[in-house]
Length: 165
Image 1: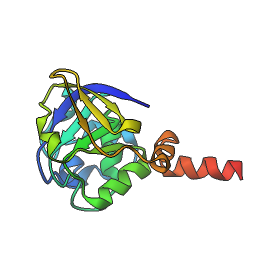
Image 2 (image 1 turned 135 degrees about the vertical axis):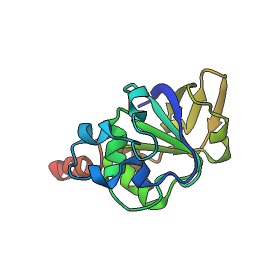
Image 3 (image 1 turned 135 degrees about the horizontal axis):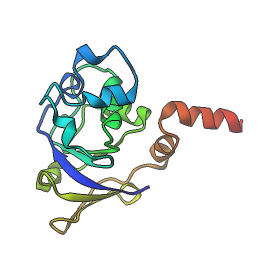
Image 4 (image 1 turned 45 degrees about the vertical axis):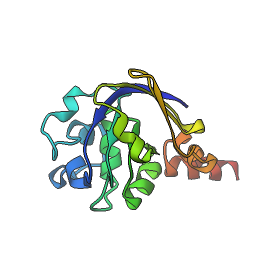
């Protein structure tokens, strides 16, 4: 599946507490978490986001605690994809387990500007900046990870596999 949306940039070392502060961890409801996405960084940030928009981050995105609430909040805010220079490893795994696509673009991520229209082609490992007409090529999404995302996350993927067993 390909994605198109407006880029919303955040910086380096954005931790899970900035993504979804601890005071909102009383639920796992994605819509409720999404309402407060990035309120630890900037209250009201999520009001600028439209469903399908794309988050663009710097280095070490998702560092901090291992809470699964962070990728759930991003998804609940309507953001299906995060492009970053790099990701914290536990966030990387949690994101895919929850059904959030991550694209690691290295230094090239810095070329994307806030508000640029992006197209993400995960199977090719391609990020197209439609506003400024350039492509970023990164590793394509492996088939195993694509299967997890197609099922909406690891729970859905395992359920599908067990149903076919």
